[in-house]
Image (tube, rainbow, N blue to C red; front, side, top):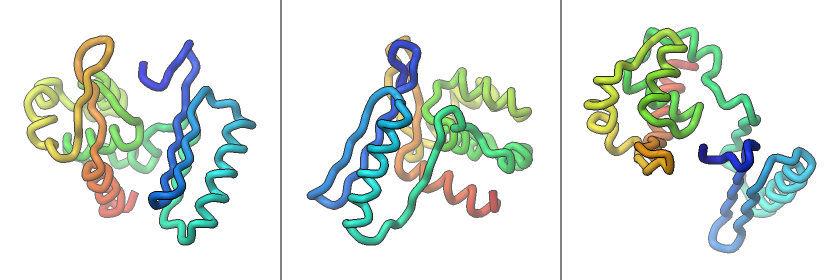
Length: 155
């Protein structure tokens, strides 16, 4: 599974500030090391000037928020697939189907096989999975579209 080594999750944080400052931290999430690295990155950001946006996702909590789950029936297949990829990260078609079923609004396999890439061509990209098949993740436009859905539906 991507992001896993020896059964433990790995974290990669990359912060680029213009052409001069780039901070990259990668490895198993040792809480103390991660905190130190983030402090150094935040200091670099403060020195660079205006911070436009900061998002924090805790390990083990990268799941759909409760307010999204409460409104699950109001989403189209496309919207739900975008939100799953936005909140839960890269997935293959089987996992998208499984998670949507767990949430009570199944994205059918036939839609995933025919419409997923056709209707979301500029919003997602696929990568070959080492275990076979494709893994889908959001493009930058897909991230913006997912955030627009969140804003429009006031989630």
